[in-house]
Length: 124
Image: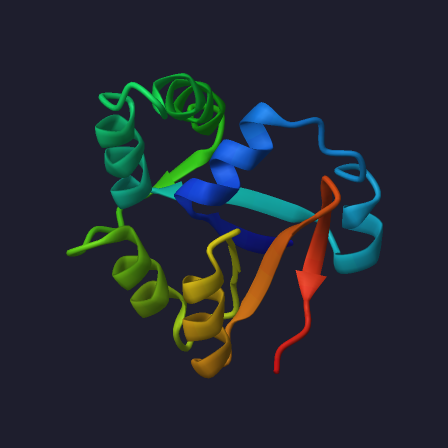
């Protein structure tokens, strides 16, 4: 079983779009278990106060309620995810280009979306 830690951007995408290959991805990578850090839930709470992002943030928070919650906190969600993922055999799910770049530099595996399909991004 592969643990995938979701960031805010990934959760919003997952909650607001129709993911086409969610069933097949397990055959390619292995059984995935999605988890959400507390710091990401906190960020979704802050985003739900924004007029432009309220609907997406609330949908993502509702979706995240069905996932395992991890007690990960930090100054920012990106910092906390990068620190937690370093040295662990987990994947980080994100749509954030800056976070992807940072995670690659740390040698972390990244899960993302391409054309509403979940993809494992190459390391490097």
